[in-house]
Image 1 (cartoon, one colour):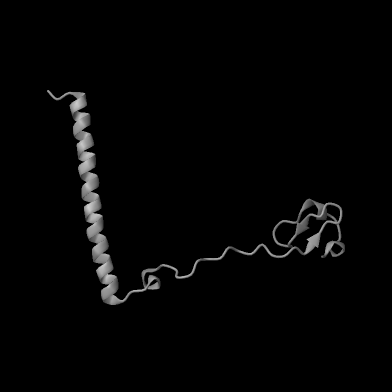
Image 2: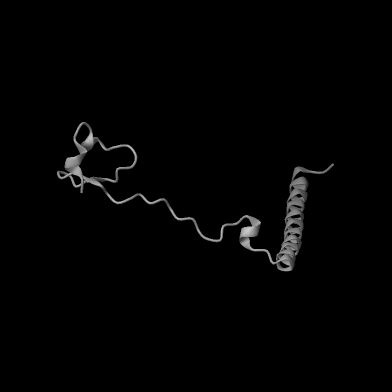
Length: 93
């Protein structure tokens, strides 16, 4: 009868064998992919990848400034509390 430790050792060997097989198949797949890219002169955009990095959305320049605290608001999103119930025209920068 096989002991628990023997099963654990066999399991570890199997994990290592599986990892080696995965890496080998991965290398073969990459070689195939590279060959196809060269053969068909594919570009990143052909494969669905963006060629240019996306830029973050601009927060915008402050349009309103609280003269007491110096806090600003760009006019986008929810208005700050210091503007509640007040005429915004007096806070325009």
